[in-house]
Length: 419
Image (tube, rainbow, N blue to C red; front, side, top):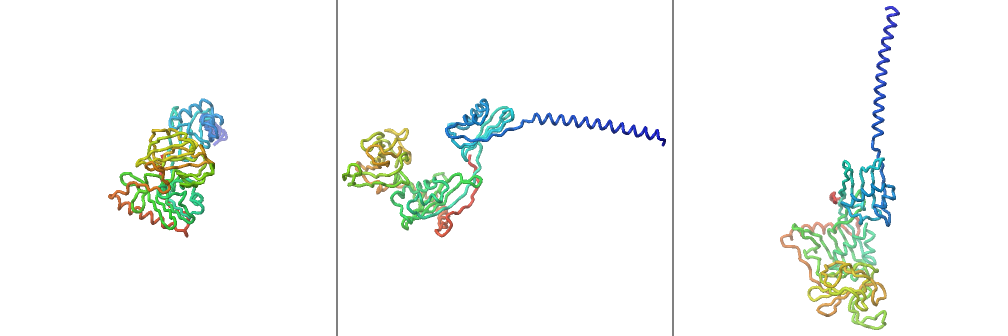
């Protein structure tokens, strides 16, 4: 082949490569432009997390974090469809996700660990809903001995004092923890506990518990029959619920007992004290000892602010020296057992905050601490065998909580969804 032919072939091939290169370059340039346009048009997000401070509403808190006024209005209006914003509390947390142009993508509101609400943008329409919270249900057991008082002895084993309140409520008809607690008494409990991500959230039911006072055991089993009737029963199937509470207050001390001749701390003379004085902090809730009708609610001479309730079988209870009477409590109103009727105070003639609690039976004052009350309905006969087997399992578990064992036994039962 001559030199001229080789040169022509070389020039021809170079022309083809050059042409293809230009086409390829043009293609990638166009692709780069398209990618750039897509990136520039992407709704880049902004994430804002915050929490409500003291004396703030959600509305003010969002404004403080720089959220535009119109978006704040949209959020609060939409959220109010599923949540009462008046119930917002300091410490409630929120997460706001928007585009750089402040267009809402989503909003989450956490009220403690038990409530979660979410707002999402559905094609320009904001939709609010309450989100389910995933909790893990555990069964735990604790035991201990009383030293000084029940509260101080139990609080070291509790994640929340609510467990002590629940425990005392179980035996509120059987044991007066103000007068009958002795050092060395023992307690055992098996109860439900809800956790989230391994952290304590709240207590469920106390499934079984026992209080041993001077060697005498008091056992309670929580049982729900197939018809949905539930309550606490002793090992013989008798209901622990009674017509009257042993005490209208819990975990306080008695400063003065029932007496026909007590030295009065103000008048310095001996005179009858026809009730029981429960020393407690001002504002401590006072509950009705039983179902009944309010026959007096107001000021009563030396007793100050007082509530009187008429019950069945000729009984009348009186609650004196109150700092205030509960909202809605007035003469003629029906009240239920354990309903709050007032708050401890020192109105009238009193040396300090306390409750003066009195009980009349057929017109005569009697000692509330010695009153015998009637029990509730026992386990129905058709459910006795089921209750017997159920209680046997629980009492066996209680017996495992021996003094020489660890005070904490845990076993995971199931995963529960709280809605």
